[in-house]
Image 1 (cartoon, one colour):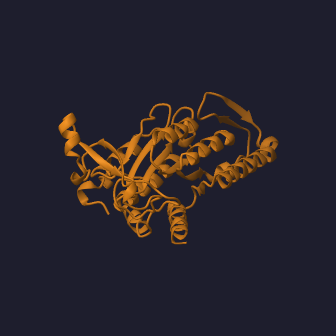
Image 2 (spheres, rainbow, N blue to C red; image 1 turned 120 degrees about the vertical axis):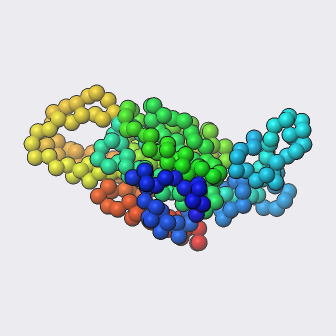
Length: 303
C-alpha cells in the first residue's frame, strides 16, 4: 500500500474509510482485457517480445523511473523525456464522478466519493495509476492517471471539492475521455445515470471502440424505487428550475412502470456493450458493491 507520506489526511476525509480500503485491498483490482502501460505490472499486455518494446517518448514527470530518461533527447532539446514501452503493463484507472444536481439527492454524492476514494487507494497501493474527472458544468478538468507519490492526496482533494449542481454532462464527458485517454484504461463511471439511456449506449460504445474497459456504479436511493408519498407533493428538478405538484395516487402506477423500464434499458445496454454494471442501493453498505466488483473481476482474471 502507499507509504505513510503519500497517504491522504484521512482525519479530514469523512468519505474515506481506511480500514475498509485496507480490507478490500486484499483483492487485487484487475482489468478484464489487455492493458498498455509504462511500468511493470500484474496486468496482461497484448504485446509480446522485445521487437515491440519501444512505443514513444513523453515528458518526464516527478516519480518516473530515472533509468528511462533519454539523455540524447535531453541533449537535443534541453528537456527531459522518458521512454515508454508497450510490453510493460500497468492498469490505468480513470474515475468518472457525476457532479450534476441530482447527485445531491440523499447520500448519492457521499457514496460516489466513498467508491472513488477506495478504488483509487487500492489502485495506487498496488502500483497502478489512478486519475479522475468530474462530470460537471463547473469542473470538467481531467486529473491524469498517475502512480506518483501524492496522487492519492490530489484525488481526495478533487473528490472533496465536488459540488452537486447543474445539468449532467456525463455523456459529453465520456465521449471526451474516449478521445483524451490514448492508452487502454479501466473507466469507472459513478453516477445515478439520470439521462437518456440511448446517450449512455453511445458513450459506452465509443469507449469500447477505443479499447477501454468500462464499469458502471449506478447509485440509487431506495425512495427512488418506492416513493413514500402519502399526500400531494411538489417535485423539483434538481438539475433545472422546473417543478410540479403531483398526486401520488394518480402517478404511482405510471411511476413504477417508468422506473422499471429505465432500469431494464440500463441493464440491457450494459450487457450489450459488455460494461461491468453494478447497481448500488444506498441503504446497503458500500462494501457490498465494492466487494462484488473486485471479486467478480478477480474471478474473470483467474479464469
